Image (tube, rainbow, N blue to C red; front, side, top):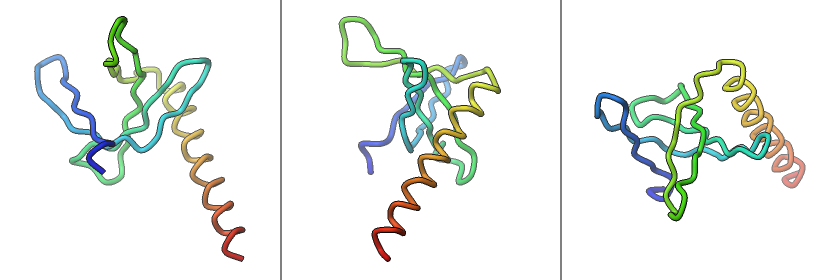
Length: 91
């Protein structure tokens, strides 16, 4: 699962590792739903800002609580839909 790990750095230079749980696209903008490596139940929502002329991207924490909640709710709905689909296939 190492492919799903990103490392970000905050304003003070402290580095954090995050596990990408999913990417949600809303209004043509990609957002990462990520789990910090020091947390088991708190996710972080980051906007993906592609770098021009590069395959790299910058991740910026979503500070708008309403938008973060919308992204998180979409992620939870997607998980719920996947669970329902899996349960229907197993019946």
